[in-house]
Length: 327
Image (spheres, rainbow, N blue to C red):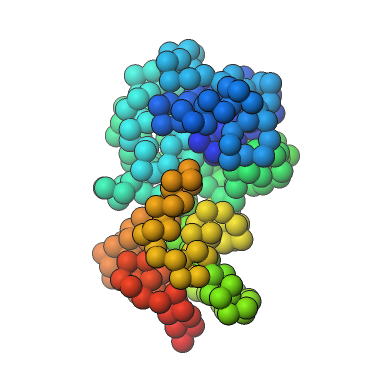
């Protein structure tokens, strides 16, 4: 098994695979050079708390042929903005893989396509599996327990691909609701930004906003169900691990919630995003906010919570305005 892409999530996934007893390679491409240098020196990713297990073979940009040799499961660990370029890098080497597994949680910024569509276009004939559910990279790297959902057009493909990774620390369920899983995985980041806004407001006013956060969390979940079902997904997916489960963990911690908190304290949205990205943190929920509002408009849906976040991030509204959704 090879993980292509040595960002925090890709590295954490490789660490889990090695602990699960799978022969595991982690391939760092040209965009991962800083992390690759740190891992070569210390066997530790700069954004993760644990060192690489001995079972992880660390490979660099020039070792793609070695990384892809006899690969059966190719885990593509780019974010949504880099998915197509990663696929272009590796597609000739992974054509013989049994499945291509995407861990990205977002839509392609330029096209608005889901990751299963992007990888399906770039890697001809590949069976694409998408991963959803609550899975913070830091906890996965530490071997702490979680549960996830793997989705493919044929459930049997998801099951055959996922079973080698399924253990007490990473317990899996399977579905053929690819659309539902991918939309939930995208929307939960937006929901987390909104709740982060309240955390930022609370810092300025010394108010916890716990009741308001619970109410807006519920509103966000309802809107996720609305959009998922309108676009062909299933409501039970939105109310399961990929939807409300991932929404909860992302709202409690992670880069999207952090971004919302910083904006909630009054930091300019564009400057805040630029600073986080300069520190190596990808905040996919920002672009996802645009996608949600576009999709809602196309489906003629009214999603007040997500629209309020869009106004704060892109239209100059005050963070406090998100509370108006409670009305």
